[in-house]
Length: 314
Image (cartoon, rainbow, N blue to C red):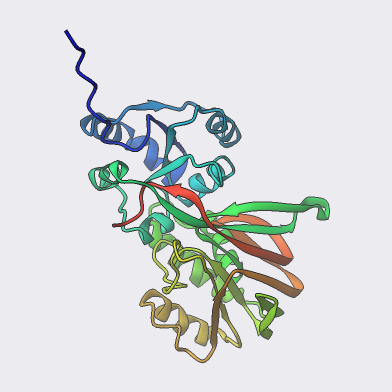
């Protein structure tokens, strides 16, 4: 009697390794795990838990996964960022369940924290090739470092806000924490001289308090700093503020919340394949929300279609 063939899998991967950051969202990801586990089983996903003692251990274990195993990153932008070295250019598929503080890259894709059915239902679709950013800067001891970014980076005011987020009241939600930190950073506002080269050509040279280089559209849990960004278009975007006093910066922040700041004469922007930002004096900087200290120069190159993303919108 002939054996009936197994029905085709409804998923584009053989198995799914779940990587959960227990610190994401100040412990939200860990608290939500029982509910997420039930949802994974309800969607009949072929999943397994990837246990890791640290972010470095998680990266090593993802790198050792067999071909055909996709990764489900449970956390925020920082969780995804730490896994990128095991995903860029490898063909390994990535899915997202946003349970971090800001969830900005996932938010751009239309994913909402806690809506597990929406996030998991996307895993049955074919993956879509998403762009990433390759960032080069000087690390400790002035040694050159390279890192991958999914969402974007900020220098100056934006990174000052990221630093102050660590001191924000714990009871505030993601956007509320960012607003608290932003208002605190306004009081410490510093303007420095910067040169921004886009594709080797000068986009701007002069005084500035912030420069953002984005693959995604937003940061800070909903600030639409680069509303025209598209992580699938093969272009990075740079947005910067020119001569901004404290009152003008506050007014601009309100415009950023409504994504209406791009026409402001004090905002410069552009898109391309590469950008170099050079400051006369070092300014505090962050990569996907992770602080990297004071930097005078950062170079960013877009690498098109480098990550196979399962969580892309239709």
